[in-house]
Length: 557
Image 1 (cartoon, rainbow, N blue to C red):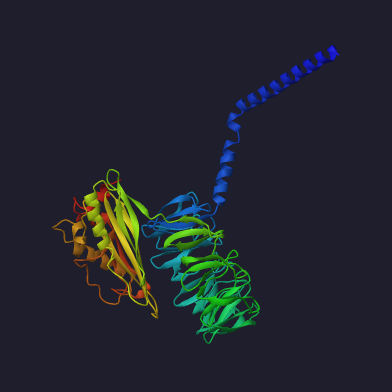
Image 2: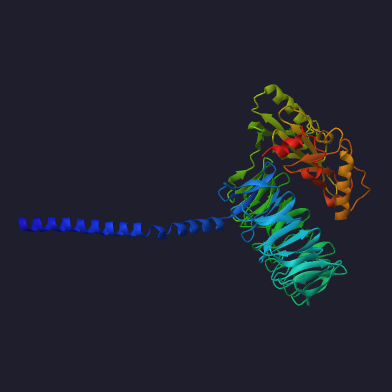
């Protein structure tokens, strides 16, 4: 028995020794092959995971960036404009030019285009000086910029517009269907809606009519059916051209997830593919289903219903979009936000801006809201807080409030909204752009307006355009020359002859440019939008007051 115990002890000691030797050998192997450890492979796997993560465009204090699905900012707001990622690239704008970034926020295609579209089937529409073509994901031109307009690629073909007619090209840039149509839609299910002399039909990829022209309106196929219109009523056809839902509705939207939103007797509801209502028409407005949810309006606010018509997210938003990869963009309490499918608030715009001085932060700028219980009016205006000099802070706040049109009280049958963007925040200089929107009940469309506040946050001084330049500078003549040249180059459609810079000329500032702007209808039609002229500081450096705000901006890092 004693012998057995001794053997057992020896076996245990031997086992421990063997384990120690194995561990020592393995450690020595790792040390000899330290440069071969899979650390780089692990990092690469992490990067791939990050690239596959869904990102969502956000707007925060007048600049655009991106969050992930958890609501964490992954690319800080820094762009003038931004869109969701498509094929792992997102189009963004800096200094009024579009380019593309990857999911690290790195610019992979420089911002040199006046216009751009999302990537689709490996190519993206881009435009320079009103000429359009396509680039690939490396930024190389795949189709020369030679067309007056283009549409995105779909099923291997893209619409191109030249000399007043639409045709189609393939991804090599070859014209496969000659331009001869008044209008042309996307190819879906092998067919595209086109019109000649105001009558719509559907062609195949050889340009042959599969569904003969006979409709006043026609749209691309979605979910196997396409919207068609006749005598201002709308219905649906299948890919054989058979009318499967008679045109009896006042308006329709595409089928999505087996249902389509339709307007009947001024109320929106949802029908199935047999044309029967599955969700009764009880809504003032409605959007298509996406990810099992549809945005609907009860006459006051937007909420979301499920596929059975149950209100699963109560109406509380002034604006709502469809769900995209788990999240939806909404306006909650008039702040841009994202929610998930349960209605949980994932992200919202923080309406606070640090006031940047030459040597540090001067305070914060916050958004206050002015409402009118009698009329449908909401004005957001800036106010400074946390400044060391309270007397200066009060002076600045009185100016900011008075310059933001807060005295306006609204009127009956009017919808009025105003918000602002901080266009410049540097070296104690702030340039704030107020954006207003007014809609009168029964009007054909609303009206947008702008005003700007250019203020020195170190002393409360408001700057007019004249204050930017040397007292002796003939700044009007120089700016007029620049603007007239641009009008000519762009062939801008003017309602009347340009009269030149005025004493009270409206403008705002950015990090690199003076932006002169005009209201809608001042010189251009409503559809043109605001007429703006971007004037780089370098081009007017000989006139700039060396003690003025632009000089401070240019000197600040």
